[in-house]
Image 1: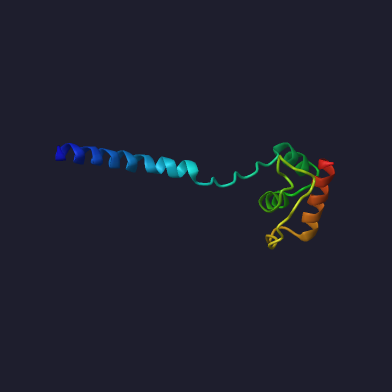
Image 2 (image 1 turned 120 degrees about the vertical axis):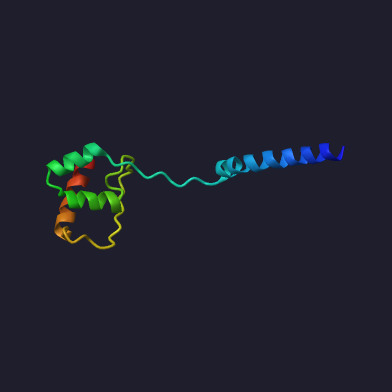
Length: 101
């Protein structure tokens, strides 16, 4: 009788231990999905004069090239890369916003 109880308790504990990672993964918050860039907009911007360095900077540090765009954009100006001038970035911003209108 005692062996049967210990076996039952052991089985319950083993099943609980196996199920715990699934319970945790289903209830834990998921990280936000990154926005996907609008590839057509990137191509048009490049053809109209945006440099690759300006496009890459805006993809990484703004929402200007996001597919889901509400008309308002934010740019993290954490410092421009060495191969990108402020004038070049401003030109690219003007190009992209004129396409988005």
